[in-house]
Length: 336
Image (cartoon, rainbow, N blue to C red):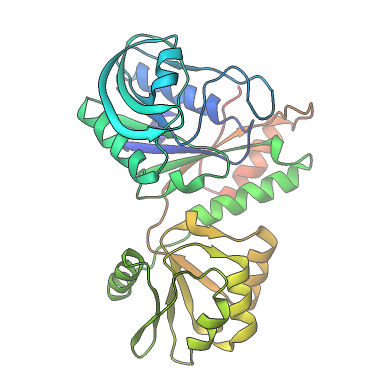
């Protein structure tokens, strides 16, 4: 799997659900990076590495790190690690488990990791680990925290999925393909529109682009679909949304204005989109166009064909069918 991320300095691993094989994927990358002489920098958006999941009470694979690895984790977990580490820096990033410590592994072993509370602090932790010699930064994602896939956090993303999503293999594949589709949404390529969108998003302003650029006096697009629709007209070509894009906002726009059919809605990146699969299909069918300012670089999908509930998919069939829909995107069974 190393060939898929060798060219990047930072990657995130995002699990679609618990028990989707995210930690197994992480361990595979750690093993291969070590074999290829890469120094890993590792942190997490949530807690990982504990022997038993504190929510589901199911056994979890442990995280094994090698000598020389750089770790960013809270004080309490730093002390619990079986791997022997030296403290490189005590940061001012506070968590419920203590300050984030940057440490170097002196003796290989198992660790537990968590990370900073904000995406900005995760990014800064990555920069600190690079300054201490990390070649590749890995951000271990967390369920319902797909923001780690944002291009502002990591250069590339691996999506972990599996049978745990549904007993019906077709439905599990459908959910995965949809998430991969979102992650691969194309970025707007018009440089003048990109400049306007970038400024609006940085200023957290909703902007409507037509014959002129109009900024709406709204703090958020949430529950503001009708107001946005009223401000649109036949000349509207783009609507810039600085925060999240949810189903209700799009639905209210569609119900209020016919001008959505010739308008493209732009968000920062695909981690800001919260639209269910069936709603996405409906919006696509009626002509709603959504694109991003920054495209996520999805480099692989890993699969776990077995669910902790006791059922499983035939691995080769599952992998081949998912590969068929994802085309050239590598699909890797990390459980073999």
